[in-house]
Length: 335
Image (cartoon, rainbow, N blue to C red; front, top):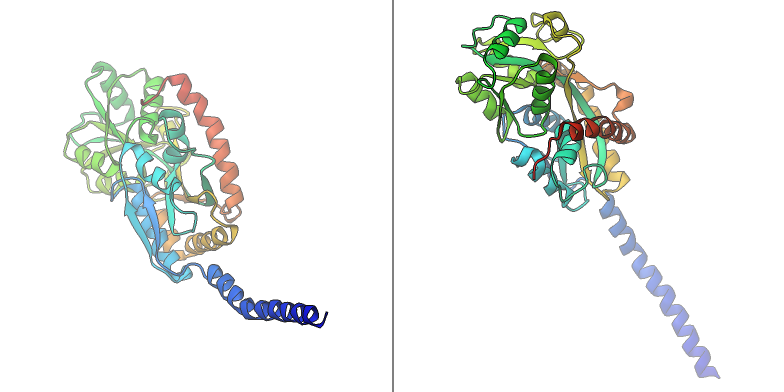
């Protein structure tokens, strides 16, 4: 009987000792898990360097580095209109160290155009909306048309002879081109590129005839006189380029197209990590230097109340509901 009591006491004391012994270790493990970020963060840009997504990513990443206390590295993974790089993030570990700066194309349009191995809506954790971007109708310097009306007339007089460069089937530039054809009754060829920067280089060189693309890549060569800018696809003129008329003003009523940019993490990333990343983005967008730089590029920042994971999730869903029926009705599909 005494031996049993002794064994019971020994077990109780041993269990208590173990609890005391391992409690500090458990606390250390939990604390370690909460220290984020503890190493560099990679943001995947699913297009070639030099394009609009790349420029925005680098501006935001540089400022996020300050608030997060870790380097934020940009990695360009181009191809297939952004599906390769975006897919890599969908498959990445949900630990907050691999993110994607996506846009209308990668997280909405591609879902209706490509047979993807991931779900553009359900395989990502939203972090924050960043900026909205109207597009600019531009052409090579040698284009004889002096304004948008003359460009439309020239295209009608030369059906299927002109070429429009874009980042691929289903990209914002491609869909804007399809919309342009529908609104004007013109016909021209579409030339896909791995990135907008590459298409812009060919436009400047005169290898393609026109593009409908973001102010980030179109305004610098337009200001330099290397290409012609005919109109902005927005309701109002750009503060960064007040001399370029809107499509409405230039003779093409209600021709509105724009893209937008946002940050996502892989599905399953913890709310704590998403919260820290969101704070980093919000901090970056509040910085006067960043705001000025983005404004100079023709971008409009989303208001503070829309810079939340919840706002991005709702916005993302609404964009899919808007664009997918349009794409399917146009029969745009890449096998």
